[in-house]
Image 1 (cartoon, rainbow, N blue to C red):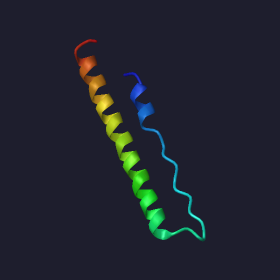
Image 2 (cartoon, rainbow, N blue to C red):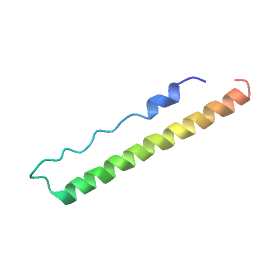
Image 3 (cartoon, rainbow, N blue to C red):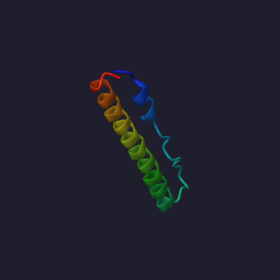
Length: 59
């Protein structure tokens, strides 16, 4: 099976946390990063399902 879909499962940078960081802002930045990661996982899953379907049809 081609590995094209794995490129969709890319890493997301961690928010920068320092001694003077606002904890609520950091929590929000982590929430955004986790949302992006979940989107990457969903896109990868959908891509792989499409690959399996096409390969099952002999395409």
